[in-house]
Length: 70
Image (cartoon, rainbow, N blue to C red; front, side, top):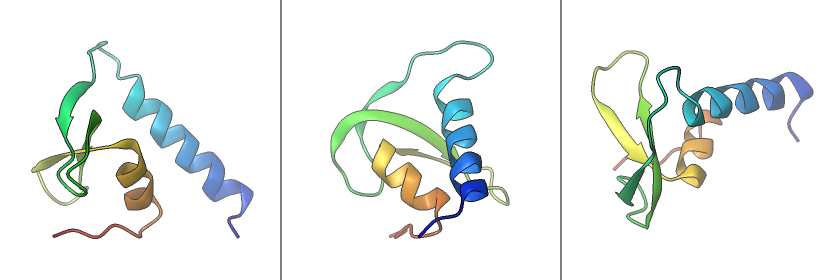
């Protein structure tokens, strides 16, 4: 079960990722994690400069700490 604060923080991060300050379109392509072809979000790890293109499901699992990086 998830507490309210974690749910609120996850929603806030998803909102920021979907609506960046300079409006730009989301990319369409293959997810770097599950390899599904869909709309992608850019994910940048806090300690790395490398970005990954993830689908919404993989992005949420990375926010929850359940990501399965290859």
